[in-house]
Length: 240
Image 1: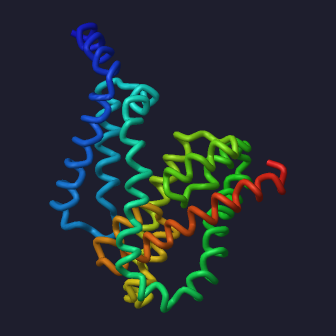
Image 2: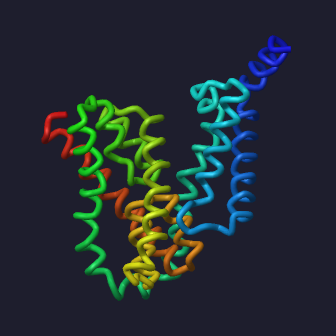
């Protein structure tokens, strides 16, 4: 039985259909479970999908490298999906123009801190330069983060894990702390989610409303641009 399944698995892994099917099944199942739990603000639905997918890979005995090779077709959609976020930005352009100065002032320190505190903690714990390079772009949307990681000499799977954890933690912290800090402005909430939580935070922002979603898209895009310019230069200056 095991040998029969192993042969079938190898045949399925020869095409991207198995990886894509598992990804879509985990996505819809995670969304269903998220809705059944009342859509808790402290836990994004993508976390359920990721856990279901990881469990499926373990149960089916599929190596992550093989899965990623098949799911690479889905990665091609990340770029167009990110570009499509320009539509809500255009729709909210008057509101963005009204606050462009505080946005530009707050972005550089926020983006730098997002990279520096992760790298700093890992460095204090004795992490290797490869690990440091993988953690540095953890708050950048995946299409840009992949390019930054390759430039810095990091490991893409480790970086992707950091992206997932960062997005989940950002969504949880904003959901738990915003009511206590009386932060109700959708522009502020959206920008914070986008700068720190990249795509996962942006998805959560759109659940709050179109204004929050647009400002999250803006924060995510500007953080990606700033990080793509800042991180490689900073890496060369510190000699890592």
